[in-house]
Amino acid sequence: METKIIEFEKIDLKNPILIEGLPGIGLIGKIAVEYLISELKAKKFAELYSPHFPHQVIIEKDSSLRLLRYEFYYHKGKKDLIILTGDIQVPPTDSYGHYEVVKKILDFSEKYGVKEIYTLGGYSTGGKRVKEPKVLASGTDQKIIKRFSGIDPSMIFREDIGAAIVGASGLLLALGKLRNFTGLCLLGESSGFVIEPKAARSVLHSLTKILEIDISLEGLEKKIKENEEIIGKLQKFQEKVIEEEINREKEREMEYIR
Image 1 (cartoon, rainbow, N blue to C red):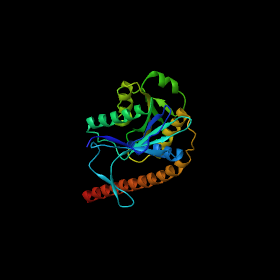
Image 2 (image 1 turned 90 degrees about the horizontal axis):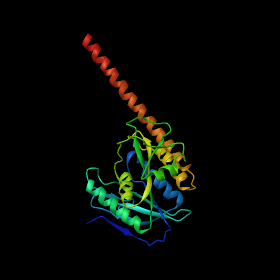
Image 3 (image 1 turned 30 degrees about the horizontal axis):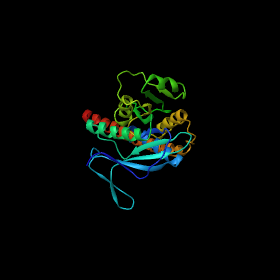
């Protein structure tokens, strides 16, 4: 088996823009893209399968099973869009697999006339929680960076020289640049340990301003509230564990003194 894309429908799009949101830090890109798909009522038209994905399958609600995959959706509007999401990314140890899968996505995008790519993901703060996540942006060239500088106060263009972007969000743009694609990578701040719908909202807010997409982000508020409650419970549990450990340590010290 080789990496391949199966199309269900031949579509006619005018200068479509590719938006990628695959699983990664905080599931930020995936949450953002799946919300966008839902709000725009985008329609799935193709799937990508690859032997570079992990050797496991997904069991569906009806008890059937299927291979891991990427999914392509399209939306016709003021700006036509191709939206890419999926179950998983190629494992980080398989560099060749990453390059092969990304090349296949670029070939497919080029066939439909894509010239701009926007990739969405997460940026780890190393465990530090951020009350209002910023969006850290980088681009293929100065022209697009200058074009969107200042469009959203929460979006900051990165200046951390030598920093890396791992996975499809970086490779799609870097390899795409060699083939005359242009675009931006938008990463929402995340502690890196939990699902981050709040950061997904920040990323989507920047994206909708850039692409002039008119959708409400209110639907993410419920997810954010649920997430905050889960994090609150986890913090209380962690504090309890720490407190119990401190008490046990005190008891051990008292036993030693006696």
